[in-house]
Length: 173
Image (cartoon, rainbow, N blue to C red):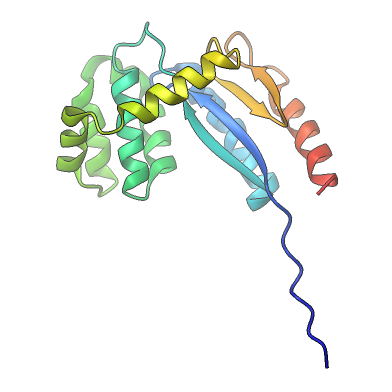
């Protein structure tokens, strides 16, 4: 009697979502991200990449806080909650970042400490440097299948283009 190995599930297609958590356009882009998740499920891995813009005072701190949320197991939930309050972030800054952590039952003291000790600065810096190296200039920007799609000026048609590329890549799996 021979046993065959179970069929391996196809490798998911990776979609990098270059985002800034104080960016209203990134907040609007969440509808596309949610629709892509619903359509593709685990066949599409959506990876949040940080690209804080200098024009937003709290974007760098928000990116660091999002990395702390990843450490505490709720990276996407935290990022989405902060993006839902982009206008408020500009007014409240780090206090809002800590409030969102509390609202998600995360360890807000650890968030505060991480913002003070800078433990996630290298991760955010590395994302930003890589983004600049591949030509990211604004947010949201997507990278899928080696193709960069810039949503910083307009998001019109981006989800359809992402779906075209994802369908082609998944057909090749």
